[in-house]
Length: 191
Image 1: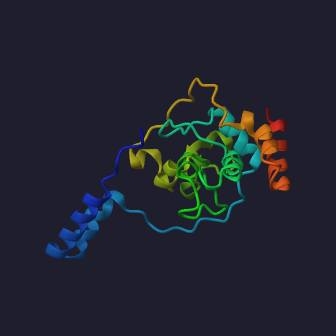
Image 2: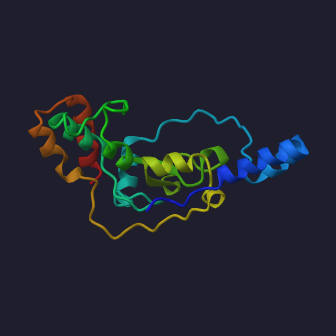
């Protein structure tokens, strides 16, 4: 189940109606519930791969927002190299050249309290496994702001298909060795 719909269309419809009927100030008042003032966000270092894997494992490779199982992207890449006509994979997720499972089930790190609102950027306790779709929807919003709740860590032995990764990579003929060996080393060192 995906998170509930937001009410952006209705609010923006109200903003437009208020602005056209009562003026710009009335539109601004109607926009207040979803106001998102621009702010400068300092450039931050990327989350280290080791931390990413530790968070994914802690969360059992499940999105903490919608609860879906996620699949380790390098595994999807290897499956794509084995079955390019049936499970296309493109490095930049190009439309038509990337299977929908890659986009909908790839995990990303989400900061529960966004860094843009002062959340601790490098604190793993502020990070959760999120599917790419939920992460895109949540964006820089707090959970309160969008009415979401963080799901508990599931009781599950799901591992994002990482348990098959090395054997599958070998079956595929060890494509892109530097990339995959670096991920395999991190997985082995964090188990």
